[in-house]
Length: 180
Image 1 (cartoon, rainbow, N blue to C red):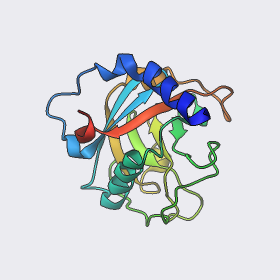
Image 2 (cartoon, rainbow, N blue to C red; image 1 turned 90 degrees about the horizontal axis):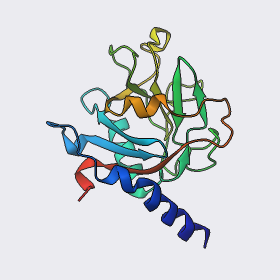
Image 3 (cartoon, rainbow, N blue to C red; image 1 turned 30 degrees about the horizontal axis):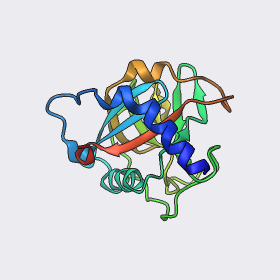
């Protein structure tokens, strides 16, 4: 019963976002569409930089793992973190094994999407974060997985906190090419 209510809520919250067009020239096979409680965010994935991480995000989106997952850690002037579809609080990961680091020279700036991890550089799994501002201290230490190409205004509206009380959520997360 709870799952049915969650699906119905997801449909109601996502309805306005479903009619939004995707950015022109978007490689839909390498983009994810995140419909949140605040609106739509489109992320261009970077399989050229992090092929294993890009595949993981697409797999988890296709599994429905990210649906109704909260932004559990949102720090003003830094980033919004989400992706814990196991425990919903930042301590969980997916059923898949952790990923080896795929560091690059791409700097962490506003709109960059990075993979969250524990102290071990090879511990990224399902959680990711979206940068509100430049974070050069992350450069070369975290995997850049993509960049927001539409919806940074939506990201800016996400409720702040660490942890967040009554957090905003990713209602649905889909690979753009899967959207009909």
